[in-house]
Image (tube, rainbow, N blue to C red):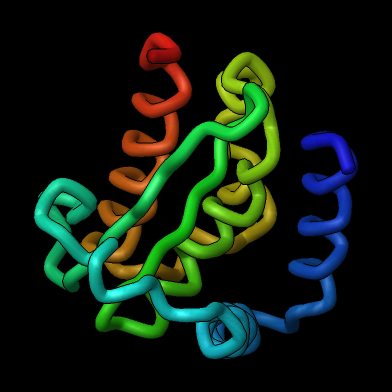
Length: 137
């Protein structure tokens, strides 16, 4: 599935949510379905700085594609991070960089988040973007 197709699917899912409580419940449900990171991936190098919650993002490249996995001690933060990790996983760096997640604000996902959770979402995008921008070893 292309990022454009994923975006349309995600926007369709979000459009079914009726208000902020439904969106938060949707995020928590997504977080609960996500597998936890392996303990060895919860290392300081994978920790996302600047978040009140503990948040880890493990990233790798396989076959020219980026893959992201995350975990957090907060279900909402895990849901937000997992949303972006799942959205961008399996795509080439240039594809990732061509579609920043600003469209989520237009879908009403970010407007009712606390400043700390919006910050976490921004930090997740920074981590994904910087990994995509990094030269391939």
